[in-house]
Image 1 (tube, rainbow, N blue to C red):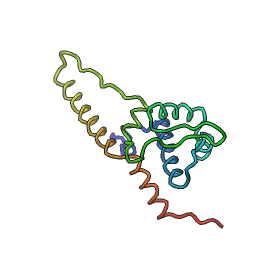
Image 2 (image 1 turned 45 degrees about the horizontal axis):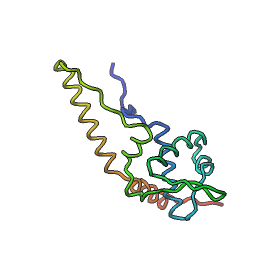
Image 3 (image 1 turned 30 degrees about the vertical axis):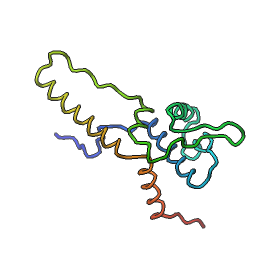
Image 4 (image 1 turned 90 degrees about the horizontal axis):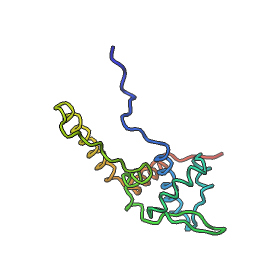
Length: 154
């Protein structure tokens, strides 16, 4: 009996990566409307992200130079670079930690070589795919969807 693989996802989107992208998109969106930075509380409440978890993510993004923090009563976070300069791969590597490929043993058998080569190709393809997409691309898709599906309040 063959199992249904239609919903199988070979590569998972961790909550850490999801939260980082939601936060960065929020910062792009906010920067287009206002010059004031956003607080962790504002971002966390809008996207239902635990504040402590978001603080850890923001620390990583700040140290990497993707976001800038501002102190004081009007403090918060803003993008430090242009959205078209930030790739999805960069965010994933920073937040999830860049993983080094497992070394192939010194005398691998043919089967291991074949499996290893397939995984190397998959990694190269996914890296290229994620490097070709920027935060600006994500924002434009979000913005287009917002415009085509407006919400009406009564």
